[in-house]
Image (cartoon, rainbow, N blue to C red):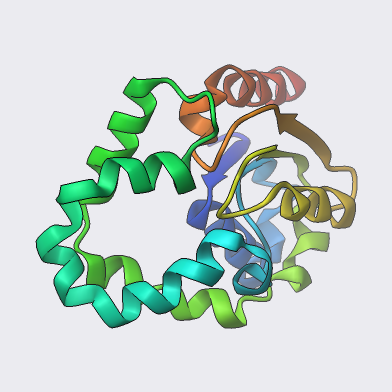
Length: 188
């Protein structure tokens, strides 16, 4: 019942875009607000320094990575997943989450990054009040993807979180919370 605000981080944002493409009638009616965090509508494999370097290596080394991933995952997560001033607890939480998923699961969705094109859904998302949040040090979904989304979604507002990497829900939790609360207030 009532209006819905959808919040999606990374693949979650892509799922929202796919929902908009599949069910455009929901947006502007039931879905009244959208917050897209550290996500992209496509072209990631070409523009993300992390994905461009890591996907080919991980594909080849997947069986070995499952065995040895925990050995030095912390430094990899710190380098590619978070910003330069991330708190240790945020790196620890991210590392713990990533280690819970087997490498093959993480790699099962990697082909998506080669062909992903959700631009056709952006007009529909604009029927809902939309905020796009990106980190200035995001290596996986660089800020230019957030800017591109904000430019292509009618009426969207961009929030750039200074020094945040891909894990904005940790590093920029205040900005994410403010965005959600702002949309809730708009709908009240």
